[in-house]
Each structure stands twice: as C-alpha cells, then as structure tokens.
Length: 144
Image 1: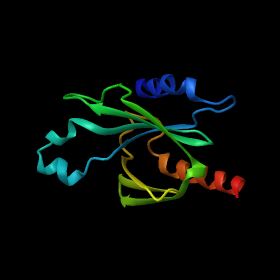
Image 2: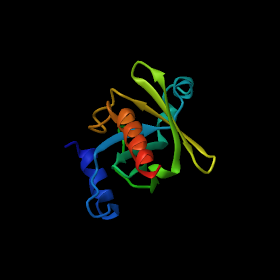
Image 3: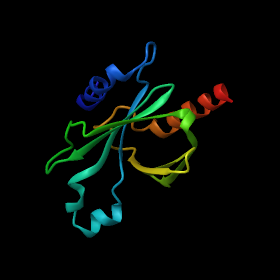
C-alpha cells in the first residue's frame, strides 16, 4: 500500500459504514494544464488537489495541497458524494490526461482531472474512472 493510500484509509476509516470498505483510491486535481505551462509550473503549488476513494456506495474526496517539492498528506476538507446523488459521470480526455465531469442531481457539475500515470499518489489511479462509472451504474440499478 502506498503511503498516500494509507493516509486516505486512515482519514476515512471512521466515516465508513459497517460492511463498507474502500475499493479503490485515486488522485484528482482541478488545475488547468494550460495555466501550469503559462506560469512555468508555479501554479502547481497550493490548492486544487484531491485524494479520492471509492466504496460501493459513495465517492469520498479529500482536499489537499501541493507543496514546493511534493504533494502534502493533509486533509483540508473531506467531502462525500453518494452515487444516488450523481446524475451522470462523463469521462473525456486523451492518452494519460483524463477528465471526469460529475453532473449532480441538484444541477451542479464537478470537473476533475486525472493523470493515469500518477500511480505514485494512489494505487487505483489507472482504473479509477472505470470503477467510478461501474459503481455509479450499479447503484443506479439498485435504486432504480
């Protein structure tokens, strides 16, 4: 288990319902690649980074930040989104640079980016989007 996976598990253990477990972890961000290039990498520092975890019931998001040299293991804010609250999951992107747009039932849309090669931050990085889609679809079949 990666040190970041261990951090995610430790942050979420008290939030899991009996019988619920973390199935996959991921590392998401909201930074625009064009902005990063234009700022010569300086915009990488700070907020806009998220550890994520999937259970069979919901998506957890832990807001964190990037330091000067590396990603910090800090929980700035913890959120959760039950799959029943997600209207649709729309993946896009190319090669290793992916995006997911989560359209929520309340009309909001959350957009996250994911680099499938960033496996040093989360062990489930490569299969994260596919697992999210599958868990969302399974929850919709049960609820619907």
